[in-house]
Length: 137
Image 1 (tube, one colour):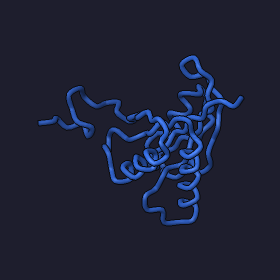
Image 2: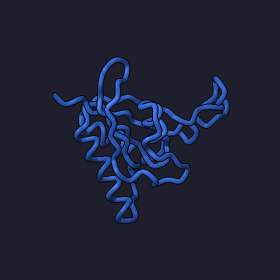
Image 3: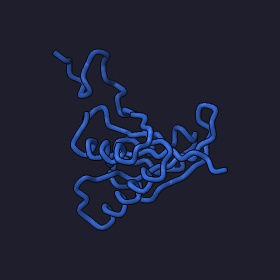
Image 4: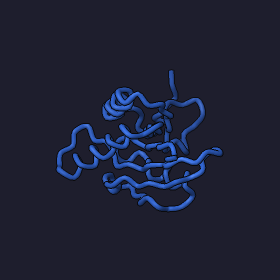
C-alpha cells in the first residue's frame, strides 16, 4: 500500500523548501533566498501528526514562466498537484497574496484535492497588523 502524497506548492521563494525541511526534520531540500533554486520534486517519507505520508517539495509555480527551465519547473509542480492526495499551499505573509497565488489557487481547486494554507515569513510582524505589517484601519 502506498503512502498518501502531500505536495507543498506555491509561487517561487515563499518558503516551500524551508517548510519541507522543518517537517522532515533534516535539510534535504536546498534553502536559498534566490528564487528558482528548487527545480526537481524532492520526496521524503515522514510521520506527520501520527500518520505516515510521502511529502513532496516542489519548485515554484510561475504565472509568467519566461524560460524553458522555469516552464519545466512549473510543469513538475503542476504534476505534483495532480497526483497529490492533499496539498499544502504556501504563501508569503510579508508580501501578501499576489496574482500568482490566485493562479495556484485555481490549479489546486481544479485538481479537487484537500488544501491546507500555510503562511510563511510572518515572524516579526506585530499582532493586530495586516499581512504587510501595517496597522489595519
